[in-house]
Amino acid sequence: MASFAEPERLSLVFDSAEREQWQRSSAILARMALPPDAVVADLGAGTGYFTQLLLEQLPKGRVHAIDSEPAMVDYLGRRFAGEGRVSVHQSQPDDPCLPAGVSQLLVANVYRFIAARGPFLAQLHRQMAVDCRGLLVDLHSPQAAVSAEQAAAEVTAAGFVVDELECRTCPHHYLLAFHRP
Image (cartoon, rainbow, N blue to C red; front, side, top):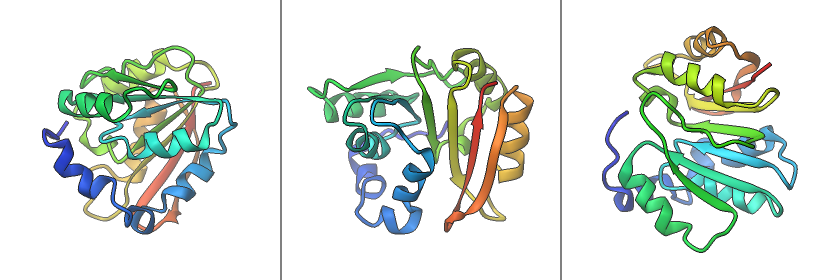
């Protein structure tokens, strides 16, 4: 993955008030249709933007904020210190280290940075519970590092079922909904 060694600086962009406008974060969360007691993994949590939004949507649920970058994991630990419904986890470049009990998974703006996507997805498949649902959100443009179609093919090759691939909800992102059968 790319280096994200300065989370405080990156937070100015990642957590900005304008993000709703350019990404339509509320539409992404609405697409997940989360019950109030869901256990959600924010995989590639970064500075915790979606972790915070998920926490607000889950009055009885839990959020696992997972990232492979040690600086981000430290930042997440500080940001959510004392919040009993958030657990922070360190993942590996080829292993999501998904905790048990996750009912839904969000992979937002990180898939294109995963260098070993095949092994990563294979591990994710082993770690996800049957019927666990995932939503992969990433850039949709002709210059995208990983096209929506390529992501769907890789997710399918790893043994997941693609439920939907759409590029209308978010202006510059595709949403790929999948589950483990």
